[in-house]
Length: 128
Image 1 (tube, rainbow, N blue to C red):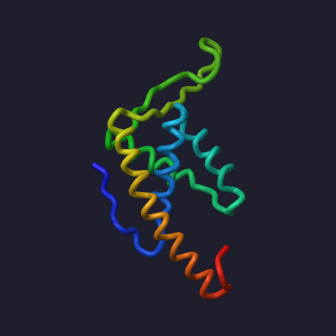
Image 2: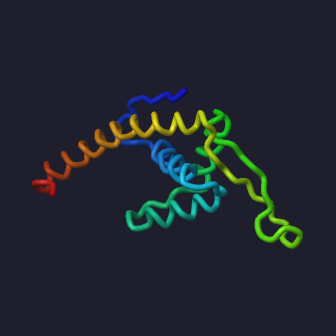
């Protein structure tokens, strides 16, 4: 099911987010805005703020492809709070695809790092 192609110059944002969303869902069941907040905190120091739209597109894609399942739940105390949230978790197929995707992304991330290291070295000297 996993289709991975050379992404061109550098990695596309959605491919990058997909890797992290897979990781986050694999660690714990959660809801979309929680994942988005966690990702924004994690990448703030790098000047990158994942968008709401791209994060939800990845979740919808994974759900549509049967790699993630959605479960409706009331957030907070039952009978008191009425905010319905959707929790995401990996399906068995999703766990297999995540393992494959990690391997494919490692190759792609190393290719991108090579391009960036070359530019740094060519213009600023040896890369540390």
